[in-house]
Every structure is written in C-alpha cells, then in structure tokens.
Image 1: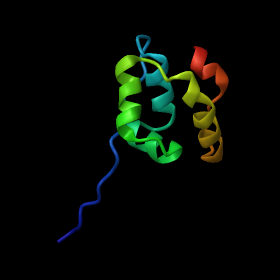
Image 2: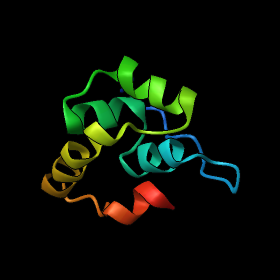
Image 3: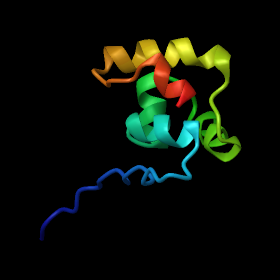
Image 4: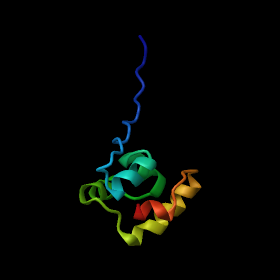
Length: 80
C-alpha cells in the first residue's frame, strides 16, 4: 500500500482583475504559505484577499519576512 502525501493547494491565479492583496498573496505562495512566512494568521490574510488590500501597518513586516524567505517582493508590489 502506498502512502499518499498531501500537497499544499496552489495560490489563486493572478489575472488582470486581481487586487493588490491577491498579487502579493500569490507571490507568497497562497494564504497558508503567506501565513507561515509572515507569522500572521491565515484568517487575517484571507481577510486581506476578501477586502482587496493589505493594510499599510502590515507592509513593512511582510517585506522583511519575504526577504528572509528569499521571496522577491518589493514596496512597488503594494502600489501596482
């Protein structure tokens, strides 16, 4: 009997209608990976997706966490 391994779901595809939050969460790998990288609860990150933006007071911490994780995220991503 072979053992099934679980794989993380992929982030939602980024389209021309994607919000700032959608694009950044996708760069971080999706809601749960973004939570692991940043230490911010997945429910909070899901809320950002729902409302379409990441609050300014969270942006610096996200940039630092992404850099430590080797993810190419820049301040420009928050204003694109």
